Image (tube, rainbow, N blue to C red; front, side, top):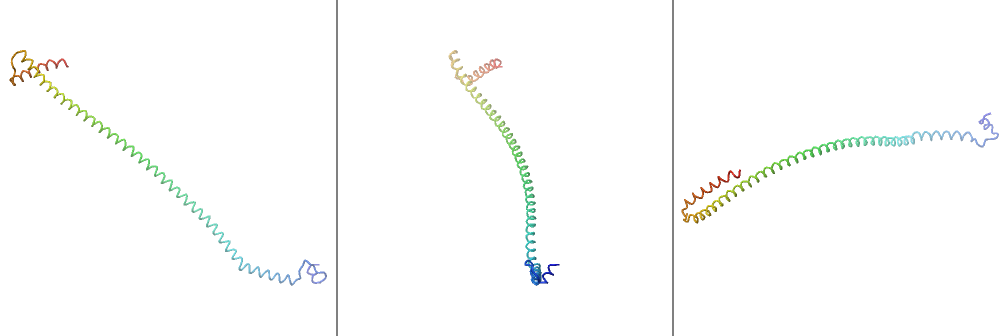
Length: 182
């Protein structure tokens, strides 16, 4: 016999089993609550879950996009860094070449200046030598005239004679000393 049959008979009702009308109205209420839940509450839950899914997927997409942008930025930075290094190397090479050129120009100028100073010194030396020789000739001429005047006993006051005698004497001295100095 089934449980419903026992209940219908009314013999000993089972305390664990509710009466049939309670089961019917409970089922009706359950179906109504289920329909209301299905119609109103479940769409809200679904919308909240969809929003969360969109946020999560959007966050992942944004993170991937940000990661891609960071990668592109890093590549640009590395390219700029390589370009800056190449530019620095070019500038360094240009500066070295310019420095070498400046050093060479300064060396050339120094050599030219040195040659000019040496030539100027040689010219001064030659001028001083000529001046000293002229002074010595004049002094030697006066001394020779004084000495000759004493030896001869006459005055050699005549300027033209004196000059001619002195010049002849000095020329003879030059001709005698020239072969000895060579």
